[in-house]
Image (tube, rainbow, N blue to C red; front, side, top):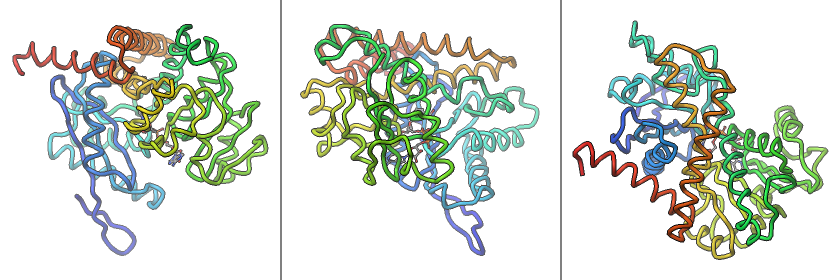
Length: 387
Ligand code: NAD
């Protein structure tokens, strides 16, 4: 908890950083800026990071951060003040550093916040050569890496592409193999949602629905993601877009429209036992962390659906963050091509490992993902002489 000056008074900000597992160092995980964030949520997300890193073989333990604010209620100067003070608290507590704990963007934060963190850390650690490796998701001008901005969404699209390429699974769902012509609804037009939609469209899918917090739009013939994005930027709302056939003031209704694939890419607990029965999609690709409740997952799988779990569906971000951290330590830049090629291969391999385990043990892909990830973490503990 730390105070900041707001208007004529002071406000005390609640914030957290959680390190879940030190089986590998540094620990790694994003910082969420949201008024809904709480300690339990940050702890759960830190644990998910441990397993996500294990699944894609990046050598980090899991961590997560949260700052309990609605960024829209603060000026840019106040946000900078909050972010820098948060970083100072992390430095004081030895909770940040290229070899200690390396934050990244998450819901409500992006390149701008990562720059403030990097600058504050570097100022407090003058002369440290790899200081900028204290945080990833930085802009390219501040030693960020080409491809990090779109990495999570690109990974989501690759994970979906791999999933729909399995002919027998698609036959069981009544779908043809391949992404061409598959109808997709995306929830959240932020970093993950926007880029997921962009790459899925590039790979041949049709984006039929887009949902934001103020409402949702639908067109069975397809929506142009950039046109929708620009319309929302100019008007402040996704509603009123000329290319939409239907619009819904209640955003969640957007998830219940006809489609083959649903990509929740906003927040957790969006698909629940209450609304899962109305979901048309046969595949849910979890761009967000924890968007499907356990009860809803059970019902969806019983209905015959497939869930591509968050643990590797959105692991493209941490994979490219790992490249950024390596690049910051080595002091040279990788090309976008090299970054994409390597991260695509990693996501593809993660899918193959998880899919093989799910077939072998006849379990869902989420259980299979946990089996693969927990085994890797346990192996590391074992060889370190731990548990
Ligand atoms: P973001 O802040 O860039 O975007 C989130 C978007 O969701 C915003 O446009 C917001 O308006 C929208 N939104 C909020 N409430 C909504 C609602 N009720 N219905 C529809 N839309 C709503 O955040 P992000 O970085 O894209 O993160 C989204 C999710 O992806 C989070 O769960 C995050 O943990 C997860 N994730 C992010 C990354 C990353 O690299 N940024 C990596 C892995 C996982």
